[in-house]
Length: 98
Image (tube, rainbow, N blue to C red; front, side):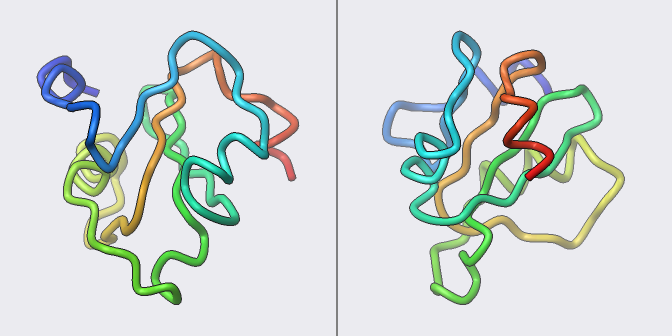
């Protein structure tokens, strides 16, 4: 993930960065507003989104979409709703395997 992308994120952004603690499943669900979907980025970071965001008609998240498309080989997928980037080493392994 580019430093420019991370440094341009604001506090009221639709994306949050976790790089100093391991969030619980409940905390991630609270942050994205529902069930989580876990997307692994090429650099080892994890992008967490609302699994039901499209069905809930959540707003398009241009920041998260850009991060996802820049850090995976997958193109054409739009991220909607609040998203969380959990930096490499801070994702709770138990959450990833559920």
